[in-house]
Length: 126
Image (tube, rainbow, N blue to C red; front, side):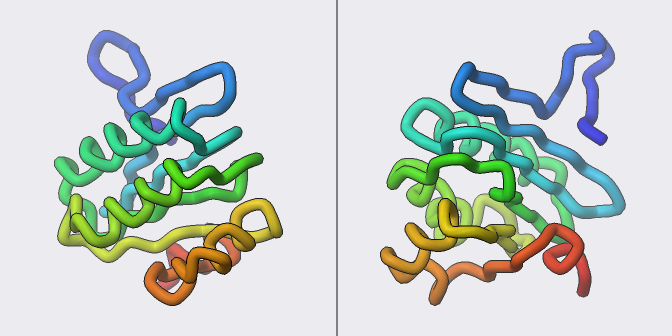
């Protein structure tokens, strides 16, 4: 469930016409769910919410790409930033399945660097 501020505004939703990023925080885990095209338009929202998630000091950070319809280099750059830049000290896990997300990660050899899981339940398992 996405957290909400006292005003009732969603704390972790960033919606664009091409896609959205939602931050869910529960049981010490922060999950960023990305839907739509993760491109130059949506990548800054992923960065913003990854930084917000880091301030929650989660034990685990998961970026769920199962709803992504297009993975551009800008989106992959944000995955690398979250991993290498260590936005948070928590381990980063990426959920990616299917040709749309896995193929670009394979071509750029990011599957060798990132912890990739085929489903959210597998990424959340210890």
